[in-house]
Image (cartoon, rainbow, N blue to C red):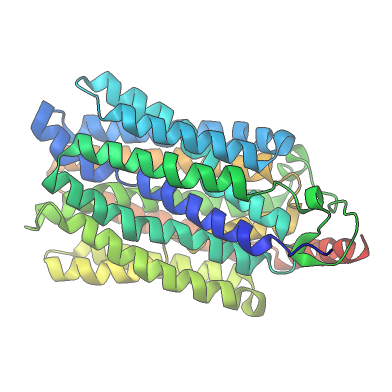
Length: 414
């Protein structure tokens, strides 16, 4: 009996995992106000804790990538999601600053490194070659829906029940929903059940050869894609962590930041779907350049914003260009270097991404404390995005397409 191809189930579970992982990790900015009111911890100090989260996440990306290459994404994703859920529940017990740094800054970050975009991108890329761009876009929509659902939920919980209940509820979402789906619904490789990527009929499958990390580090495409991607990290987390505080600075309520991020997530989900459909026709590189340009325009608007209505407009424009960048860069890395050793390679790219994410988060809080305004911080985001456009423009599309064609041919033959 021929077993139904499990690729669609894998994409759904990756979507669900990313929904939980990103939804939880991106809530940090909403906890700033209640933690400051309860314990007097400053914005700079809280921003430093989030920067620690970003750096820890980045440092553990290559480590998790190595573990994925060795043990498969299923085990790594399940154990990491468990750690993330437990860390949030522990955060409900905090009474001292070091506990927030440990539970959110370190433990949550380690868990996120193993169940976030990198790990799930490797999982989906092992199940799809020809449809990789489309399926990565579909699974990555979980990042948007996590923000769309969990950021507003966090705001509601904070207003009505307090930060401790919010931490507990979010933690149990990971433990009781995400972890069981990963454990009982996924397989690390299609050949474990006699299937092949994209559902091609075969009795046995050997994955196409992949480039090693040491070889990838010597290539121009790796560094251009990665250096462009760091501008995404800097600007993505500068907005996600500090937009709630900036909205309060302009006269908005405590829950406005969650609403704005929810609007951005909705716009991003639509954009993610569209870019997934257009990637094969127009190429990932061209779409990536376009998204960096749109994000640049959004940051210029944010830097000039003085009224609440401008923040709503920013949320829509920024949302279009936020998360869709991630599957495009992931697809470029996978197409160029192969999915089988993608964990360590993509993990290194994410490490660089997170270093700049940490810098963006810290500078945002530091500049706001020093000057009383986010204006300089937001202009720095606009400036660094110019570099993202330039680096992406110099990517060699022909080398990426050639390697993708070889992988597809090898898959059909095997």
